[in-house]
Length: 326
Ligand code: HPA
Ligand code: ZN
Image (tube, rainbow, N blue to C red; front, side):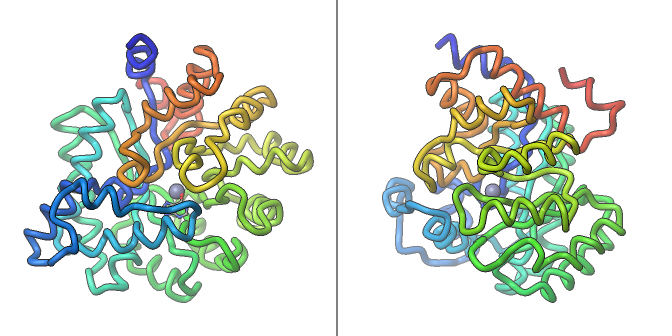
């Protein structure tokens, strides 16, 4: 239809996408077969029917469970190339892709296997599809700060392949300050910094304050609760910090898409963007589907255009490259 065609044709950057969250049931079955792992499901439909979550914690259980089929470099390669094909078909020109190395090293998959497979897919994606992409390494906030620091050290030999670091997983009792030393070191090593401030969590306002005042992030993932505090809004405006909002994801793990919050953020001059987060778990809705969802919830065409523009504006691209996409 006309809206879908309009959205597909908008050049977009995707900045909040967990590569492990793009594991579609079909590929999950294929990787299980490849690696000799038996699953309690034999069809994609059975896998889809078993997904049931209502909040971040219940989503994360299935998300980590699903990764168990990923073992070798080729698995990570196939996962990432499949995402790039899908994203490219939806008009994504550039992606900054999260990966969760500790979700793999904690079950015995070596760090280099993960990063080499992903990197090779990014190189081929550019060659075969013309889409550009970079990696952002996320630490799991429910693991210790020591494990995060050790992971950062393991990443240093691969520094040229990793643009920035982030923080994800379960926010409850794992505030940003827990990782202050890790992020200070990451900054000193030249990485860009971002952190998840998931929607409607415990102490959201305090966590937003910490990412701004203590960590000094370059961007905020989710973060729509900033609207609850005029002081936080001013702090963000002053620093020009952007937000990676994920409407369809919000629809699954919170009480709604938060589309009107996105509209309000635009009105205040904040810089929200739209992203798909973990599309394989959220009804297979990729980034263009998120644009369609907020349009159907009342955002105008010019607001969609602004959201797409914001994605290049807050991307961690050199200024020389920033305008070559639009
Ligand atoms: N929030 C926290 N952890 C996550 C998410 C998210 O949106 N996606 C994958 N891990
Ligand atoms: Zn996320």
